Image (cartoon, rainbow, N blue to C red; front, side, top):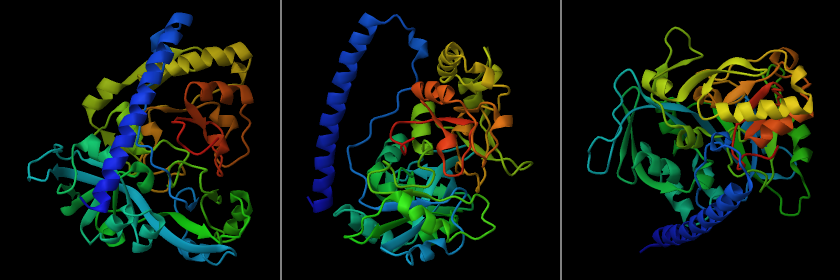
Length: 409
């Protein structure tokens, strides 16, 4: 048994203990809740899965909504007190099939349907931001090879020896798995040259270190990084996280990653809409099983994921009780299967699963100072929706279903 296998075994034991303890606690709390509350179970939200208790790498993170301007990653290293840096790409790669280690088919979408994979492409320097012995797996990556996150491997039922096929006939041979936290909760990690071949080309985020004796905060670095942005940057804002500020080092870390959206609300097959490049066409059966229309007080007729409709109903009743409902004069979309490389919320967002909603968009246009009442933000947060008004590029009308593992609000 080598060092990597020993680390994996140890992590597995730790995860088992953590999940067991959490499960016992949930059962105990559930019993107390049922004994002391008559709230209907339909008002409770979906349960996100429990991932392994692996710490985030001790690295700083910077990203720009919609992707990094050309050369931004290199310029970051010129900022005083910033030392080592690595820049990574991230996009949706369209998987057409998968084979297990024996060559047997596992995922076999019927054309033109494919499976969208949230993928990151990294340089060899990315490995230096990982602990040993996991670092070795990334250092040893060769062209045409890839690594699955542990949650993705569980979702797919695949591991080392598997092969993923992508649009255009490109293949990726899986050489191992890594904890979600070490991969930024991306589903697949590949070398940069392989990423290009499967359509992952947009530079999204930078990891970096600062000098050991530097007394910096994320807020200290934002102005310096902002000065590096070209005048024509579509979303002129910089998000910076210090070590420990976020659970997953990834672009759009305030948004629930597609991997966890799949786990929580179900994975769909889809393909880019040939008549509208900003949208995808999702398989009709998934839409039929998961998307539902309803008429709610204040919101009117909305079409959302069936699992979040009870949450929105509970939130809107609480908002009405505070007297803030009058601030909602119009309502935007909830289920909106968008796919845009430069969307400030990421190339695939909670809207694709029908688990985000815009409240009063006419008074809260993207990029402008939000006017959303605090009472609305608080009540939406209580039922599991994070607020886009806290983004560096504010989207004051936008509420996205999320988990507590995202960046702090």
